[in-house]
Image (cartoon, rainbow, N blue to C red; front, side, top):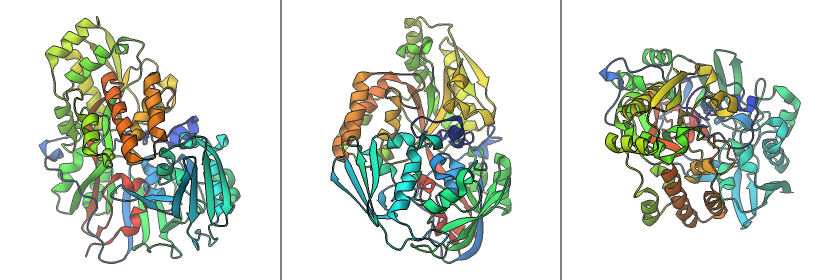
Length: 556
């Protein structure tokens, strides 16, 4: 995102939007999400899987447990919700802090801390809050806390990762003891959807102000979730303790322990040995090993994620769309899915996943997906395009990193594709801990023409991704500008009716596909492993903002 920020180096979940500082970006995973929780190519043919079936969740827990342990690939730099834009942060934070709305495991949205959200006119959203909701320190949530919490997202001093999602907000005011009114500068269909992400988190004003600059790194987070922050052993783990004053259904486990295991092999071995009960972001080279281990179950669910090649420089050969199309035609997508994604992926030429279009009627889907560029290889046609563009022998540089095989093997695949059609593709290796800078620092992208990027939507709406190509958008690294495209983005953003909005978004999809500003490669599902002791975790990308750990309990 994001995008995966890079997740400490992984895919960029989409970077939220908006101007960010280096500090905010660091927190960003590149979720920017960068999904890459693995390292190195599969060691043998058993590394991947071939039969992947998506499920919405794992079996319901049969009872309570004292605790469970969970692997995360990196330690969160902070748990401040305003910069929670990466996998490690959100995997933990989603169980401690809650938002006005809630993203469900089936990727639909419902009321969260707000018992009701209403839209009396196109530029007004009214959130009526649940009464009697208590923060972890015992204080009761009020409208003042909501106004304060949302205000932190727009305060330039905070360098909030979610600032762009508030770009159309004119004011957030208390309109009653348990009511908050948001006035928009213009209609914005995306804003209310983002209130189900970390952008809509509500924390105690008193707790946050008392913590000052230390908020998010020590002490209470002042939130309302089913778990509260317990012991944080720097460099080792974060423990969450069940909050028995929770307004909703009580968590089934008294404690959730998140262990920081940066090495992919160490994470896999910890799961196989029983040292760790489960985890998301499973190393792709470990899929086959975990599935055949007999110690637990590997599940797959909807990830709203696409793996892409991000074009960052259109001043050179890639400024000619024929060269971009040639690279797309030369890519061995099938081979990459098998090796880079462990077989758990679907070749695509669409920047958006089909699941993001859940609300679209059939005709809109046809407009969005029919006639997209081919996803199969055509080396002959690709060579011809390169020759037509006068680019034969031209040099292009692709960033690569050992951060994960989804990154390293895609970079290699791009190099192979370019070489096969007469281009001189060179790889530039970026250290895992520096890969995030590609998403946050223009200087880090100097001399780089492309880099692998896995992007996941934070809401169930394809516009989430397609806004990235609007003039001035944060992740529009190539500086693309098309007034017609910008106009369609504004038109879609202003449309609250899903059917009308998606009709416009379908046109955006076609335009983006024609320009190939990112070269789409594959859809990638979410993976989660649970040993035989526990069950109940959702399998979808909803875990980034849904209090998923509350449902984890005894399997027997």
